[in-house]
Picture 1 (cartoon, rainbow, N blue to C red):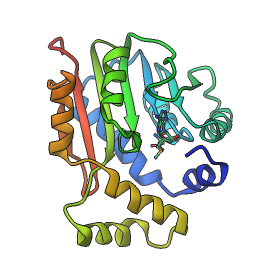
Picture 2 (spheres, rainbow, N blue to C red):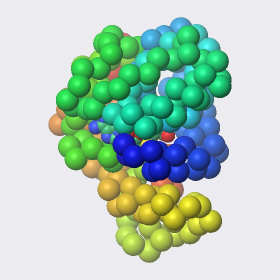
Picture 3 (spheres, helix red, strand yellow):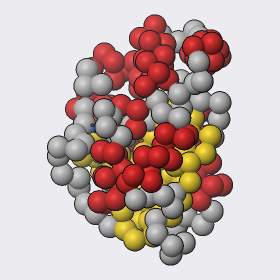
Picture 4 (cartoon, rainbow, N blue to C red):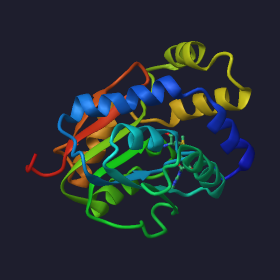
Length: 215
Ligand SMILES: C[S@@+](CC[C@H](N)C(=O)[O-])C[C@H]1O[C@@H](n2cnc3c(N)ncnc32)[C@H](O)[C@@H]1O
């Protein structure tokens, strides 16, 4: 998504309800998230989800990473507008090639990155590498519909009326997304089997839990 037109179309998409829902569910599903924490958001895009997490947890300092400069330009403007530059820092890093800004994060977040990766283990290796012991993990993404009929229903329900480029991206993303079962297999292969995978909505899944046994 390192293209200014595509990034702008994505940033202008009306994801407010879906994104706020995902952030609200983090509190519900993870229970006692630490009020003060260093958090990492992988694949932050234009920063809408990052900003919603920063507002919901005012004690968090968030490092937000994306591989696309066009996305980070939009995220920078968004953070300025929200006066959040002191608590949210942006970094350009393409997984798995570039180093991440730190490690030992108590919270690791990511929304809608997993289905962009050719190899899903790239995300799970990054989570393992950067998370503190007992870190809270909250990774959300689209989940692949069972068949084309369901895919068309989802596009009609949630994509109709939006710009053509977003409808195309939505369809491509749904086809590229994983099922709950597939993500469970990925986590087991990565040695992260302690995390739960659940179907959050008719089109989203969530990977949620605390690493290891300490919480
Ligand atoms: C669908 S957007 C999601 C953005 C944001 N998390 C949100 O929920 O609005 C996916 C983002 O992942 C980024 N991305 C894709 N592959 C990546 C990679 N290998 N490394 C880092 N970022 C990547 C893209 O640039 C894009 O900004």
